[in-house]
Structure formats: C-alpha cells, structure tokens
Amino acid sequence: MNQSRREFFKTSMIGAAGAFVFPTIIPARVLGADAPSKKVNILQIGCGRIARSMDMPGILKQDAARMVAVCDVDSIRAADAKKVVEEFYAKKGITLDVKTYGDYRGALQRTDIDAVALSTPDHWHAQPMIEAALAGKDIYVQKPFTMTLVEGRAASNIIRKKKLMFQIGSQQRSNPGFRMACEVVRNGRIGKLHTVKVGLPVDPAGGSTEKMPVPSNLNYDMWLGSTPLAPYNEDRVHSQNKDSKKRYGDRPGWLRIDSYCLGMITGWGAHHVDIAHWGMGTEMTGPIAVEGKAEFPASGLWNVHGPYHAEAKYANGVTLIIDNTFDVGVRFEGSDGWVFVTRGAEKITASDPSTGKKGKKSLDASNPDIFKQPRGAKDIKLHVSPKDDHHLDWITSILTRKPAATSPEQAHRSNSACIVPWIAMKLGRKLKWDSKAEKFIGDDTANSMLSRAERAPYGIQKLVKKA
Image 1 (cartoon, rainbow, N blue to C red):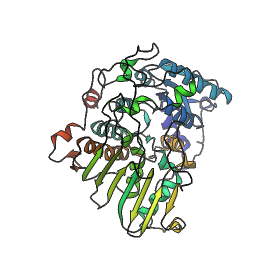
Image 2: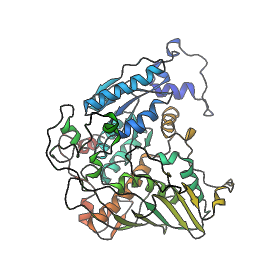
Image 3: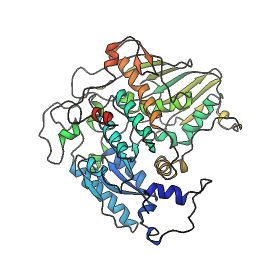
Image 4: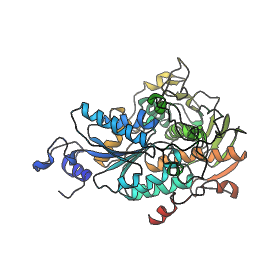
C-alpha cells in the first residue's frame, strides 16, 4: 500500500463508469472507520472570520474529509480553531488530536496531509498557494484568487502544471439560481447579450492610525508578509476582542487597506464578475479596454476606494459595467430581455453589508417564463456541484480527480477583470488591455501596477524560479 490516499480512492473505489464501488479484495488494515485511505486529510490555513463562518463548517461536515491541522499567525485563533475542530469530531464519536501551527510551511512537509484550505487575507493568498502546489497538495482558496495580476498568473500556471485539484470560494457557482441565470444567457434566451451590470457595495473610510503594542499572541511580521513594514494597530489587522462573537464576527480592518486588499472591486467583485464571465462565456479571457473613476479617502487608515464606476469592453462586443449604485448582483441585458441574479438578503457573516434589497427576487427576468423552458439537447449545460455544496464539490474533485466548479485559470481571469478596472480607477483614465499578453498597451505606469515589490523573506519570486 504505497499509494497515496487519493490514488487509492481513484483506483480502488471509483469504477470505470465513475460510480463508487468497492474493490474485490481490500487489506484489513484499510477497512477501519478512520483508515487514512478513506479520508482526505486537510490543513486549514487562516482561522479567522471567514474560516470560522464559512470554510471550516463547510469542510467539517464532509464525511470524506478530516481536518487534521490548523494554522494561524495568531496563536489564540489557532487554539480556538483546534478546540472547534476537536469538539466537532468528538460529538460524532471521533477522537482526533488536531495539530496547531503558527507557520504553515511546517505542515506542508507532512506527507499525511492531502489538501489545504486557505482562508487568509488577500495579500497572503499567492505564496501559500504556490508553496502548497509545489508540495503536491490540492487547494481551496478564498476569493479573490490573488492580490496582484502577476501573482495570479504565476499561481494559475503552477497549480495547473502540477495537475492539482482546485476550488476557489466563489460559492455562487454552486448555487442553482446563479447557474440557471448563466445557462439562460449562454443559450440565447435573452437574445444577443450586449451589457452586463455588476452592483457591489462600498467600504467605509476611517480607522484609527494610533500605534499600538503588538499582541503577544500575534506574529505581526509574518502577518504583514511581503507588504511594507507598518506600525501595528488593531484596525489594521483583526479584532483581539475577548468576546468570540466579536473576535470572529466583525469585518477586519485589513479589508479596507489597499496594502492587503483592493476593496470591494475585488472583495465582492471577484464573486459577481466571476458570474458575469460565466454568463458571458469569457471565463478564459478578459477585457480589451477599461476605464474607471472612484473616490479614495484623503485621510484615515482605511484607504480603499469609496463610490466608483468602471467599464470594461470585451472582444465579443459586450460591455461590463461595475457601479456601487446598481442593485447588488449581476444583471445581463440582451436584445430580447434581461436576467438579474443575486444572493437576496443572504450574508456570509453577520457584519457583511446586505447583498440585496428586502423583498427583491434573487432570480428575476423580463420574462420569468424563460426559466421554465426545457433545455434542448444542444443547450450549454454548466457545472452542477453535488448537493449544490461548494465544499463537497471540492472534496469530490479530490477523490475523482475531475475538475471542480472553478479552475485556477478561471479564478485568475475573473480576478484580473477586477484588478484591471481597479488600475483604471486609480489612474482615472481609459486603458487598452491585451488579455492574451496580460499587459496594458502603451502605458508603462499602468503596467507597473500589475505587480508589487516584495519584502524579504516573503513573496513568490523565488518560488516561481523554483517552479
């Protein structure tokens, strides 16, 4: 039994027709309920708000998975996560000693870990993704894919080269309403598509700039990672409140600082632009021209954009418009009608802005009957996640070695279609974009914003050379 866990699953428990079957002879030592060959062992990296509310619960409930290790640069968060995981399994009669780490790189060396789930701040997506890929681990990462476009290109290339199973936290891809909306558009039910409108909320300005002592439980230098040195402040990082509901419930300050996040244009834009691409059929490409404008705070710690408007032209003739005054969601407009889709009033965490107006339909159209029309044999049918469960879709992908709802290249392209308009917003001018070369045409200043300087010893440059 020298096979890896996932190889054993693929060759022994999945038949030629794709159905789960038992092999004729199975050694007794792999038949136990906790036999390693029967579970996908997962390392959770980042144990804060989005991990506690979304990714950890989503993974823990999967019978084919075991969360065997947790990691966070905040030792309190790591200890809390260990307790949550062990208590969850204890209630199911499973005794598990969950290992905690302050540095994920030690955990990546473990041969018994098959996959990683990344729920870290945006500026800490690319490096651990690439390191996990080089270690041969399958990957789940929260959106947006990466902080910069250059990071995204590197991560997509390496994950695909290693032939690893991947999923990003674009859970709308596993939602039947979003899939139905995109299928209706892709199959021409609203005629020729010409405009897609994406509505996103805005983040508030503010944040204290007062320097504070670094908490003893936080490895602040590592939290900063490849970003420039900056004085510690709780509004810069995440809550240290002793009340766990506030510690894990409040939106952290880093979401509003452009050293660590570009703001709602990527924060929620990565969700809705991904759906726009899915419906447009432009998942593997990008715009050809962009323009934008935005208000940026003149003072305070939180400096991501406020109100904004951005437009992107695509080679297929479609214009993508992103604006904070639109209803939150995605509206596809064609020659014969329109389709609108959103999450309704759903919030991922209690502190999230509202995703829709009260009473507004989460799936609507100029002619609602188009959702009832039967699909033809030649109609485009998009990916269906098992049980409409995004995390189960990833686990299933690991076991079957078949792609999940979103590939690394699709994740990169959706994120790129947010980053490129963000650059136009920062510069306040029209830009031409070569989506194949992933460069602005004739604008060195704009091209310089596709990457960022990296503070040693962190960053991806050495990793890319190694890959």
